[in-house]
Amino acid sequence: MVSCLWGNEVRGIVIIIHGLNEHGGRYAHFARQLTSRKFGVYAMDWIGHGGSDGLHGYVPSLDHVVDDTGAFLEKIRAENPGVPCFLFGHSTGGAIVLKAASYPHVENMLEGIILTSPALRVKPAHPIVGAIAPIFSLVAPKFQFKGANKRGIPVSRDPAAMVAKYTDPLVYTGPIRVRTGHEILRISSYLMQNIKSVTVPFLVLHGTADKVTDPLASQDLYNNAASKFKDIKLYDGFLHDLLFEPEREEITGDIINWMEKKLQARPNLGKVKYW
Image (cartoon, rainbow, N blue to C red):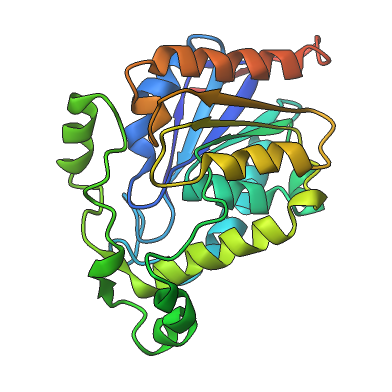
């Protein structure tokens, strides 16, 4: 796990949990936009990703990442008492954030969560994969399953963003490892089964042309969650990596506006400085 902070004087903090195969450093531009509006930013690389320990692209348990996320949030809260915190999660990171926020002790530390293209209702590449994944993940967890590689699916309509992602040495570009894939299927299934029990304030954003995760599942989250403070934004024709789409400034603006709306009930925030 690694973390970094952008910003000196803040009225709120955003903790970024990246998606599968990438790392927190990819969100530096997003972080600069947030800090320009007085939000401090941290990022965490989960195991097997970016600057963290472990075999590249291998996640033995997403529950461990969920626990790490809660512990990371608790540490940041302790260092910044009284400053409201938001969790941001992209794709599988969105699933991690949503599950972490399902635990009351984590939800109580949060002002809200933001999910972009969350990995909900994920389906295996082939029905047989779902059937054998639990066993195969035990006997050959690090095996690279080429049949499930989504490397060729466009995730942004910005060609430069695509090149930048897949030439980044910290981005895993190999076939998905069996245990990692099984863990994604498992957390996705858990979240869909418990969707009505979601009570944390949230904003979910999804592109309607996303071929990696399901925008209809995001709509179901919005429709069925018990949260009293919830919003959804669907972007017509946008792809998976929303913050790397040509309209990224618009999307970031929507995120910031939502957080500011959430903070309106807390007008007397203290300010925290970092050196």
